[in-house]
Image 1 (spheres, one colour):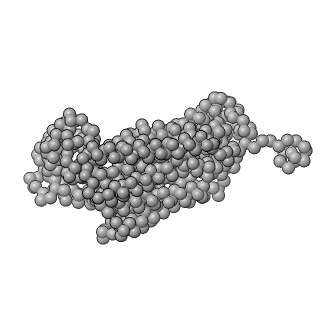
Image 2 (cartoon, rainbow, N blue to C red):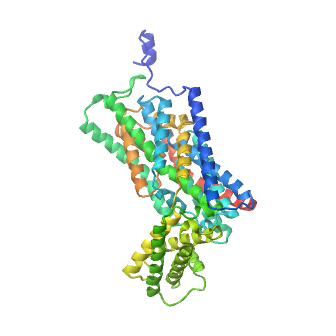
Image 3 (cartoon, rainbow, N blue to C red):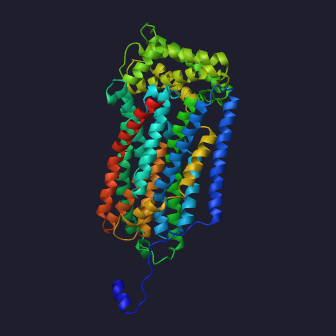
Length: 538
């Protein structure tokens, strides 16, 4: 019976199952929000000032610190936008199944995003950075370095805001990686090289596969899980739409809240690392004396590192042709940039290992390396680590098993010294991402909850999509791969609609696919153009 027929018969209309999304937060919520935002900014400022002071930095000009402040605000702004753009996907199912009220859901999700960031490993953070051209990473404190950071962050924010305004759940991961590629291509073209030489395409391909496969995994696995649930769990109410505004039975509600919690936590642990990596890049470039080297590394570990550097130098010298390169740094820099192996690479690695070990040993610990020498030591370490990674991957150099093992151990020590994330950086990103989930979420929630399928989301569909998203993102975090929460969850909802034979709203699907296809090239063009513009200004 249609609604008009129901009215004509004098029967009461069935209550709408659509959630009420227009409830405004109270003044207490606003006060807590502003208080947390202010506390995060104050804690960030205090921690930054303390670290720089303890490092013994002497300010000769305030310009780098001003640029640092602006860059940090933009980086945290990216994470804030990422919060309300991506995490809306985590709360859509609990909101549209009435498992949690909308305002409670976004606060709950924000809290577990916060926790996810705090316990993240950092592997994704440095995986993102490795996409950048090595020559730009080695000069992040220069004008070109600032241009790079500002271009890729502003491009990512602009595209995220544009797709959010249109209610399209596009991928923040795609956007950021496209922005990084755009900077690399523009940098290569501006220096008269082929644009393809400006990016580590092997790493970009690895990341690209994870972003391409994750929505297919979301669609297929969510659909399959729903089919399995139907075969094994014969609870009729699990496969029905919500009745009006009534919450589901407690066990269904618990399952949906659990999956929402898992997706929020996994999103924080994966996406939060992207902001961490960019912030560390900014800190290394502007205040290297405090953040280029891990000053908290214990003295005992430093002693082991210097010993391993000497062992590595001797073992490589035994494998290499006795040709001492005129400039070991240039040999390794050319190798990392061109990926073309020459007989000088192994002798250059041996010389750099000896130089790094001697520099660290002369000062006793990383914390005692003079401010004037920190940037050079860190750049030598980074260049050597990248060269070892390429040599190991290519299999060139004809090294014996012991030399390979020494190189691997030496690289691990270098990474411990250079690839670290201070606690305050994690806290700042966690607050930005967590608070971001609490504003602007409605547009994407409506798209996921109402515009993908032709019928209202059932409890089983919501749980299947969320569970697959939670496990996929969690697995990607373990392997250090950036994936898109948006793609996995949205495609998971579409998969459950297809498996349920509910029908898909193809106009929405086309818009989503268009946004997903255009995100990467649009971000590349936008960030590349901004990079060229900013290099003219700095």
